[in-house]
Length: 393
Image 1: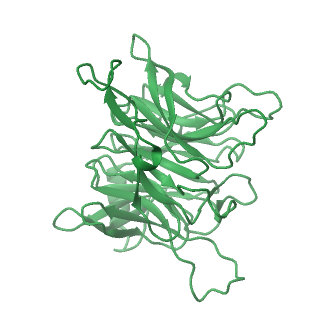
Image 2: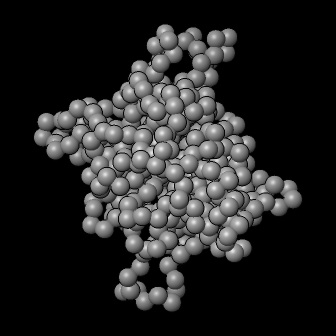
Image 3: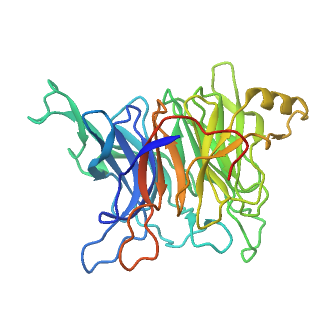
């Protein structure tokens, strides 16, 4: 499925980097990373947000990354970057803007494994002016090209878009830029004793940027997050800890709309996986015919990227056997393994035209003193689709 693998970020610049997404013209990427500190200094414990330009050779093949620029406030915690689909100068991401008061906030963690994503209460969705048009002679647009925007201080280029109590992040736009799909952690139940065990309950919402309204979309008990609109805007994909066992499973849902095309909720939900693995970070192929995602099927030390087929006929047949309002069991969907390297391969994402896939993996060189290669951003050209022949191993 993939060829011409290229490492975009490296350990000499970043202790670790990941969760990268393409700009809509596939010339830039946005990713989160922890930079290598100056000699004698400790690394920042939180991810910063960066953009970078994809470098290509004469044949148009990606060879690396240039113009790498941090677009988040110093010492803030940041996650889930996204390019504005209608304003190419803007990027959106989750940010605490300031250093989180609690440096070890609640979050989602698989058992006793070290990796988890945190839910800082200060995390909001922000927008930053990250790019501008200019040429080598100044701001003339006679030979326009995009460059990082450093025309003003970051605080003047940053605007908070979603500011609700608790954690708001895991954000992405609809294609027309009107709707923002995001995850929101609900308030702790007031009747729950302070010393009682509590797992944060994240739900999925849509912000209508035209009206400012927040529309609850997926509000099932347990963590629901990492949502993306389907290419046609009629569905979303997401991950869920619906069973409360730390084993994330994949879902898609048909959106319900009012007469003006505004989402009002979900019309039907389909569960795509139900196994003993962690399945997360689903992302649509532009065709809408399959998702790619990360899974621990090969073990928690070797996550791999898989594909899962979206077969409309099978979904319709499964839905016909399910009572209205119930979740459709579509776990017989065909799956296929996409990556085969040692170490974690996670967080896959396609360019808008499907010609490139970018993901986070540990297949680079090993740094002296470290036990495994660091997580970094890689990209490859897509030359086929997953082989949905039933052999997923």
